[in-house]
Length: 128
Image (cartoon, rainbow, N blue to C red):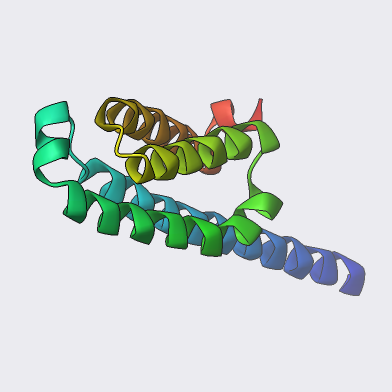
């Protein structure tokens, strides 16, 4: 009976640990998504607010760099590499003052982050 109780306790601990990791990952992804959504959606807005965009993107890349070690253990490499590439494309396009590339990179990053968040949730799609 002791082994059944111990196994049940270990199962509960594993489930709690997985739920906690998933929750923390989704929280970080939510913040990154919110920051990315605040970036301009059009060329005109981006050109008018270039300095604000630069600061926002520096904040996004900093948060991404800080979260990357955790994400590398919890997320699939395909989704992770896709989002990583989008973050650095966004950073490079803003640094080069290429508004068109920045708007495109913003869309790619949002899509990648949303997919990562979806895969971190508990659903049949995240299992298969």
